[in-house]
Length: 127
Image (cartoon, rainbow, N blue to C red):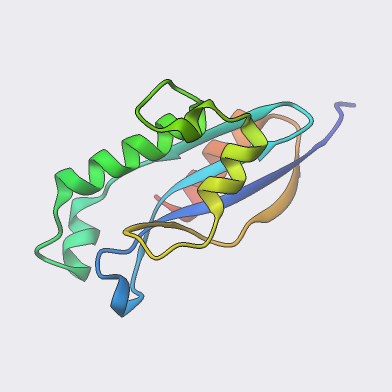
């Protein structure tokens, strides 16, 4: 029997007009401390986004989502946050903020395979 591992995840949200507090789910951020795993998967659905705000700047949002992913993966970028270790990056990315890209509260779970779990959560909350 395979060992289950504790993980934490948050739903990545696009909030095009922060003052209205409306959002669409755009991705999943998944972290497993024991496995030293931090990854995210996202998708920008222009149709859904334009239902909330027809004038949304898709390129601006796309760049922000890409920066979010770069930080999660620790890719060398212009952000010094990307140089932190995985737990610090996860906590920084999931911190409460009032920006166009936000995260849900962090939720725990148990999994056998982090990649499969990331895809399953993505399919459940984003697709």
